[in-house]
Image 1: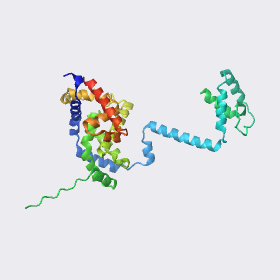
Image 2 (image 1 turned 180 degrees about the vertical axis):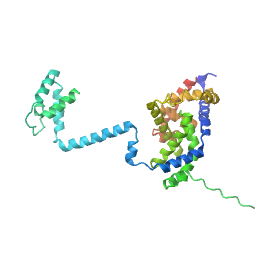
Image 3 (image 1 turned 90 degrees about the horizontal axis):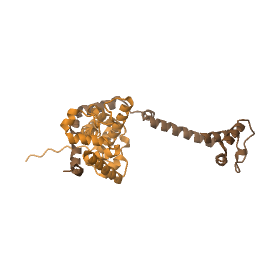
Length: 142
Length: 183
């Protein structure tokens, strides 16, 4: 018979034989007692301990989520309403600039400037404060 | 005429789980007695080396008992246990890889099993083990749950968090690839 024609039944029969000998070698009673002993000896982990026992990527992801969440809350509390819209409008304007123009702009905004505009409704580059511009430029560069 | 002895009712898995949650250690031991061999068979077929089998079985039960609150009867306890076993094996492979320890090398026991065992097990079984080692984890687990444990696609899907249709597709891909490999 061509091996390509191996029927599913044959494959199933083979699969059912797999691991049988290894399983038979297992001392089930000893395993049961070992499990009970381990359950008794190691108290249930606290939530913090369980979190800490997770794989590294999960810890990193959890940390990032916490930081982002905290950042979002902080920004929401501290940023004046509408500043996000101002940032977006300015970002659109910045996209039109060349690298040299951006460099010049960075030099300018590194110098102290006046206070931020009160209303961001008609926001443009001129309306942004130095820190806002700096942040924007770095995000575009990065 | 003598009366027949009443047959003692065998507690269900659900009853044993409830008893364990109530603090009955012997209920946990009974669940281990009931499912350890099926779990060992599943793990060995999925590539667990013999030397680590007992540890992996123990670890799987420990995780299962610790997390039994998450078991909502979406599938049978044994099926749920087997999927935890799959996670335990995956973690062991990852740890071994990180520590650069050889026994679990090549991710699973695919090609470096005990030669004596391989000889006894027969060429076809050895080849099937190799082939299983080359499948994706999902394909391997679906194949074993279906072909070895005889579970329905609904049950497999509930245990692995997928749909019955997707489980069926994984199974057929696994069979196709295994047949290609075995031919």
